[in-house]
Length: 241
Ligand code: MN3
Image 1: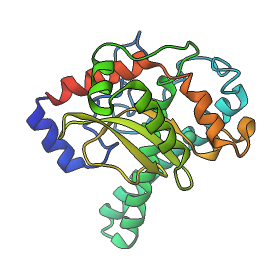
Image 2 (image 1 turned 90 degrees about the vertical axis):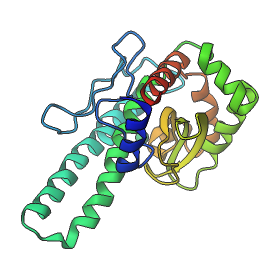
Image 3 (image 1 turned 30 degrees about the vertical axis):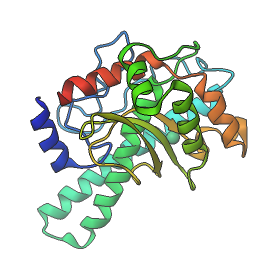
């Protein structure tokens, strides 16, 4: 897909998370670079975690990981499929009284699926740091890695209610940008491709960190898989050239 096509698609689809099908969801660095979120029939599917549930201990405990992956991410995938069915049923029977409700629900649940799928691959248990093109662009757009760290940590800690701190690539401006996303789908810029996402919903930390969201954000920063973030940037750049 060339840049023009991408921009057209993103205009039609809209949303930080609504990307052309089979596009930019990079998996682990050893895999083929595509996260598969739908099956051949267009049903949403949840991939296996890229590691065991205790892989990120002690900073992210296994029980939180299990509940989060199984019931929160898994629940969103089931709900997104149900939302899609409700919309199709409404269209088929030409009874559109509830179609706006299910459209909002689909935006919420599918965005949750997209962000959680990115989230698991964004994490690892070895301390590392950005390099190459990612590092260059961080310095160009934020001044320094420390500035980015300060910015995304503050943004993540200060979200009103549940949400996500997001670093994304904005193809319209050819720049990295930070989003302070509420719930899973609010406060986006159209077109942004998420490359690093930090889940600050209470379910992401409450068992271990209780009400100390800031402590969780500080801890999770040591778990970021910058190779995965770099791979996602690389794919986003290639897609939108
Ligand atoms: Mn979550």
